[in-house]
Figure (cartoon, rainbow, N blue to C red):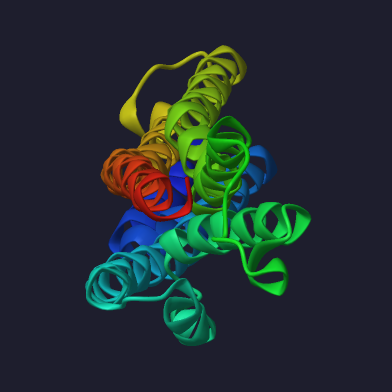
Length: 239
């Protein structure tokens, strides 16, 4: 039986099987690219779900923490509820400031000597708050870099599969001495599948990276505002 009819029959079978048929008839390189992109996509969606829940909790618990902080008359009362609101980055900033205030008050004698508790260095306290805010921001941004990598690299991996599929198509044309659909379709189908998979992995990663980055910026601004508010309270009551 001539080879061209066999190719045409195989190609008809592949396309009649839909996407599964196209993948099943793809070459080893196309399957490797598809598997790699699928891995990137699965990891990206796992990060998207985890980070989405984490940032939602952080935002909700930050609002609760601010409400408690502004209604409380003592730092010790606020510190008592911190273990229940650990998802909030404001808790980390507050605990760093609370620890620094306690250290400075104890070093200055404080209630043990009958003197008014006094903070000796607001600059040192400010540095402690800034350092804690940086740590919390880093924690919030954890794993977001993978989404950025997927968004930028995914289309290029898909493009690599596209180029490889077109190379196969031209190689088949050279071997068969013909450029009809039965000869070029397998390579072109591989190229189209990998291109689509690259976009499928990259687009959600890019969208959610930008969305989560904006959420992190909002929380970072909340930490900066809270640090200033904390400093103002300390300056009024401990200097």
